[in-house]
Length: 444
Ligand code: PEP
Ligand code: MN
Image (cartoon, rainbow, N blue to C red; front, side):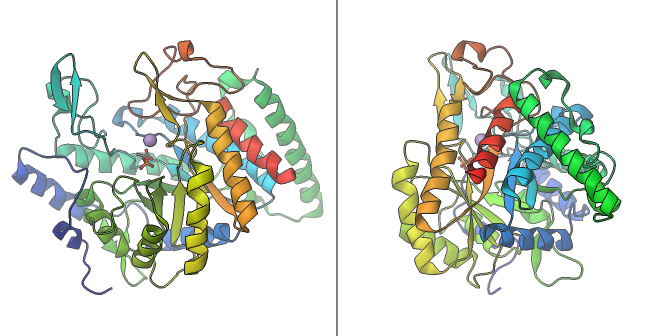
């Protein structure tokens, strides 16, 4: 790649970076990160790219989900297991309904940096730096907590490594065994209607597997493990660059801190540092696409990030909002069609549907989330393109952050269990309902 190196982004306008008081400490942290081993390998990254290429053609489906913002404190067995359980259960519903392989990707093991609308947050006349994710500062509204600290970047690396280590152990054998879906049960959901539907389906799958066993068709090893990949927003470019390496056995540069980095809606300026950084790495790249994207802008962006039109390289994570998707998506589909770029169209029905209640709580209406998913499938069907994936903010904890869904959560319920530091996430029931909707749509 001509005139690119892991730090060439430094000559471009770099949005959404924290200002550190002590630049010597920051430089030292970046140097130490550069000495740490990679978290993933080039082989894994390329395998994911191959699978994403299938999803772009409608031959697989991408399920990407997790917290808006992971917290260091949640690097514990229970939250990690619960997140994985929800994603495994959803993927089972999707594989059963869509009858295609599901690519499981967590917003996990590195989703520690957040873009913010304002550098400062003002409460009762007090103004402090905004919370930018645990790898920058802490969320409580005190000047001590809101101070950006370079050493948090090292903690982010450590927590990512610990999380990924446990995920790898869980998904490699035993826990993810398709013959033992009881391992993925969440204790608090046994009474929900979605849970009944899910268990019926699981029994059906169990019967089919027993039948296959009798025929000797599928080996035990194939059923006992699953592929699971990591992703996060490539926001703090010093962190991302420090984990950008030459991968063993492959040419070129890879971000080996995650399998699948994405560029946020606020940092995708064509002349900006985030695009410059991402154009030079060989990972698959996601780009968040909101209502401000123009057809020409999208064509130009794809040309810069994927000049060779490599299959599996680009995922467009569309997040227009239920009220804007009808007007925003069709012109962008036309732009991609005319450019002959191979892209995976994914739908993020969360970020265009965020509202703030009268009490100042950020939430999302489940109906609008479902509407955006439904419209996305319908619009693509009209244009002869396919929705190859979904991108969700969700958790396995029994939270009350989004309004609506089968549990009928109302705005007064939000206070019951609102745990997110940033955006509201779907709880188990709401997440499963989306999986069932997509699976049901495919059945017609
Ligand atoms: C996010 O995914 O949490 C996010 C900030 O999204 P977007 O860039 O689409 O606003
Ligand atoms: Mn978010």
